Length: 248
Image 1 (spheres, rainbow, N blue to C red):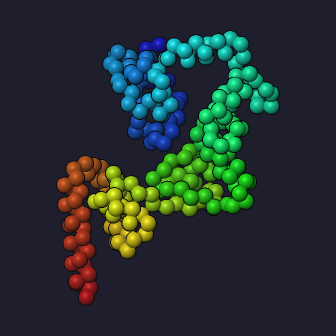
Image 2 (tube, rainbow, N blue to C red):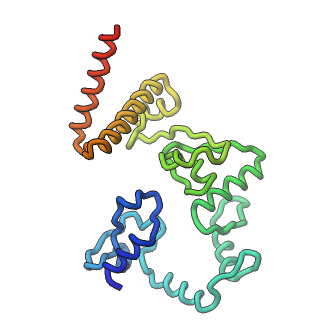
């Protein structure tokens, strides 16, 4: 199949997650091996992220490929109500690595489903309903998982599940409080007296960028230059100051 056909089929029929569908142009991938994958022009890319951090043994590992081929030839699928040799063996090996008395494995189809069932099991076991999650997090796109998610992808899905409380986890690398040291970040994240001022600054900048986005839509332009954004920010604040003085 040619790159043109792959791209045409993708754009016509594939709905990509977390994307404005008309604004994306996914790169068609022809193959992968080890730490690399390549496109239809045979241009190689080093897969630093291991796709979704799930190819840590490398693409097309020969033992993995052979195991998939062997199992497909024996039994492609079986529903959860039945016992199966490979599922039982996998559970036993995982339980052997788990700490303490954790000796049962519940298999799911993906991360969001794992989150949903983990919350359900925890609530059933403890009798408690509240779930704590950091703002800097992503847990999946299903109901409880997206509610536990802290990043902006959650906003359009609210209100959903109840009982989830978000908090600021220390993250000095990209501090939401603009902290300059790990100690300052921990202090602000814990609700220090400077946190409210930092939060106000964060909300002010967020409001600015929302207004800029609206201006971009109205004028059909893009504010890609950081200096231009800062200049516009200062101009808006100066105009607001003049209006307040005139009103006084």
